[in-house]
Image (tube, rainbow, N blue to C red; front, top):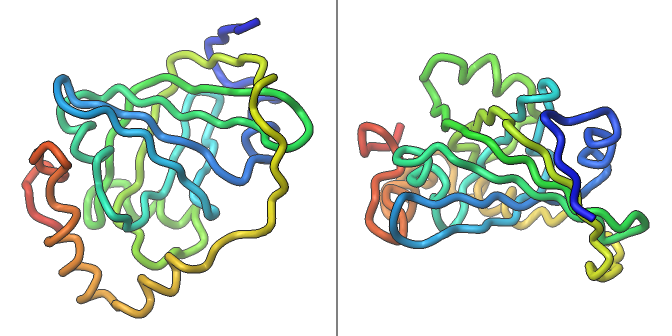
Length: 183
């Protein structure tokens, strides 16, 4: 049932754009594997082999720390509505932080989201589709605005303090930035 492709075709891209959420999977060479759901308007397809996603503040920052040690990344979408399909993009990625080359140009591709802390730039090496026959049907009720309000309420200084306290290291104690500080 599974099929592999060297890149995102037009049908794959249409499927991705129709989904309301995606999942990110990453791991360092040792330690915990992380799978994280992502939502909001935080993903852009740049080409058949390149995707950007805007990483907003969360309770952890595992992917950023993992990518410093092992650039492997998997993104996954699954349809909860009509079409039974699971799509995975496998590749390598790097995080771009505010002030680093590329940040301003890439950030301009997104509608501003309070608490944006990194942009993940992924090079796709393989795409795989599978049936999704066992994925349940679920109705989309709308976007949550909780994270947006949470970040707005903290303001820039409050977010920086939160990043320093909660997002500077992974669960395994690995730094989440190359210089181990937050911008």
